Image 1 (cartoon, one colour):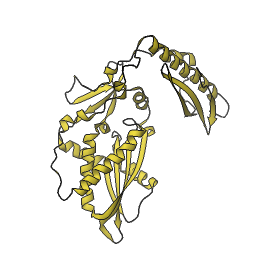
Image 2 (cartoon, rainbow, N blue to C red):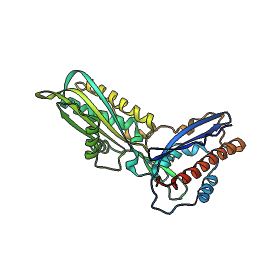
Image 3 (cartoon, rainbow, N blue to C red):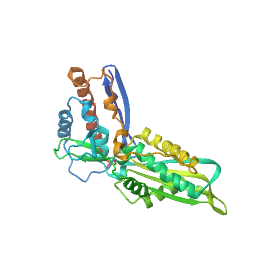
Image 4 (cartoon, rainbow, N blue to C red):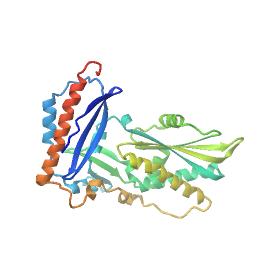
Length: 313
């Protein structure tokens, strides 16, 4: 059994490699780079921090992480937050920003009005199919755990308002670069509480501001509600809905979105999909949890040591 305890400074950060045990026969090697930032708050003694880590282990109950209707409101759905979600909840919102770029080439030009209508329709359907875009985190009043919450919309007007608040449309003769599109989102995004913002730039033909020949899309999404893979899937799904809305704009299909049932589209957390062979308690679980805690504890000591070296603070 090997433990990689290497630690090196990389461009103002500390790179740490460590192994985590997921099962008796499966180990994973991870590497992380942690920026060295001088702390302005009192330093918690290493011994105390290690005691916190070692005392936080408890048997997992996957059913705790299933979506359940709140007792306080029939329109509120919640589940216990996963460890990575708790980590992001504790960070400032601007540290969770993800920006994704995509483009859609048109085989023949379309009217700007057609694109505007299609973008609004695609935004509504994306909100319905991916309700996680409207999640928020909350700390329960019992003081025991963080929860992820979803409030079902009761009227289409609420969704229309959400779409208008979380999207913007622009046009011009030239394609725009990544930074330009990103700056536009930062300027136009006015609601910090929202987890997503879609900015569409329509490239119009020279001398004709009515016909659109190319579409650029920049999506901002909060890391709190999606991981990297999910963020990569999101633009593709939106563009698929957008293309569908464009092709059917002259004869839009009759579909009715039941927003009161949108909670049924919430994704089941991965922890609820584990197979029966996964140890959730008992000797094997305790051994693996203790082994992982020791690794984190040792790396905390290493990081603390490096942070005290001259030139790193």
